[in-house]
Amino acid sequence: MKRTIRVLCGALILAVSCGLAEPPVEDLPAGSQDLPAGRQDLLDRGLWWLYHARYHQADELFDQYCHAHPKDPAGYFYKTANNWWELAQKLDFKLPDVEKQFEQNYEKTEEVAQAMADSATDDKTKAQALLYLGGAEGMKGRWLVTQKAWLEAYFRGKSGNHLLREAVELDPKLYDANLGLGIYDYFTDTLPGVEGVLAYLFIHGDKNRGLQELQLAIDKGEHSRIEAMMFLIEIDMYDENTPEKALPLAQELRKEFPKSPFMHLTEITVLYRMKKWPEMTQEAQTFLERSESEVPYYTTEGVRPARYCLGVAALYGQHDLDLAFAYMSQLLKTIDSSRWVSYAYLRRGQIYDLRGDRESALRDYRTVLSRNDFWGSHDEAQRYIQEPFKFATSP
Image: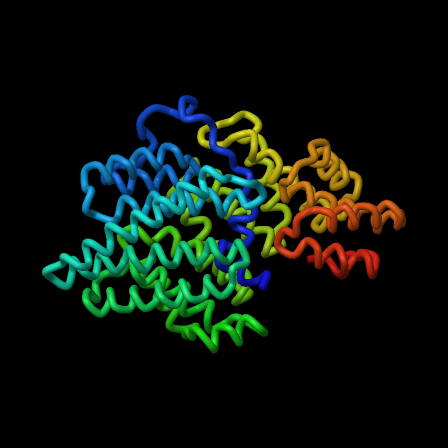
């Protein structure tokens, strides 16, 4: 089931960006002076802030849209999406207030979208309503996956897919629907093992069609383009094992959002997957410096993933055990529920193994097992408990 969590949460892209804390609203720059010309629509502006991990700022703009268009489910849908992104990027921590907002916004989206569908007098209006109904079901399903509510998540996915299919039948030019359709089709056709059995019983997709749908969302979607690109990056990096295809997409997003720490870390992640250690080191060092200086829109919370990336590059790329050890030790000065602490214990354990200090290595691996399981960290720790780490077995 770990792969399901990964694919539905955005994989290492989101894992790496976890911990990008949002500063207080009063500390944010006033206005949207960095917003590119032509993006004056409230939804576009809200999404722009969302892609910079500024959830309060995004929520304010989506709220304005809801007040201006109370019978349009779009504003409520993007408020739900805003909550989902924050929850997905901070899975390390408990956020009960955000979870409550997510549930409330999800229910409001469903309510308003259903009313719009029931009162629609033309196909395009009904299609719009079904788009947000299906999209909300999809987000709810993704959240349920993170909570390991597998069966309910699958049923939500099936329901959402059905609604989106109906929306496209009513309006073939409703290209935003292709994001949800593509995610559904691709991943339900590629889930392995027991997950594949569940997919066969309850839902069934088409990998090639899914890729085509995601590309259509990228090429013609109004508001779905960025997230479709993120999912395609995820697919290219992991499922298709073609990270070289992901790099141009990541670089395009970085160019479009040059001040976004989220997009910066996305590019770093792709470089990690490609094992381009010098390039990754350069970008991670830049990220570290911007985070330490809190250059807009970076925060000091970005220091941890930056140091981790630098340590990994030192370990796997340069085989510089002392430098890697220094980076991991810096991360372990603060012990909390963050995944970076677990990852640092894993890498430091590997360094101990390479130094021949098996006792210290085992202590770190067992510490990982005492913590929450982040993206297979327990499996990795168990593997190195059974057999000491060697460079030939590096990820």
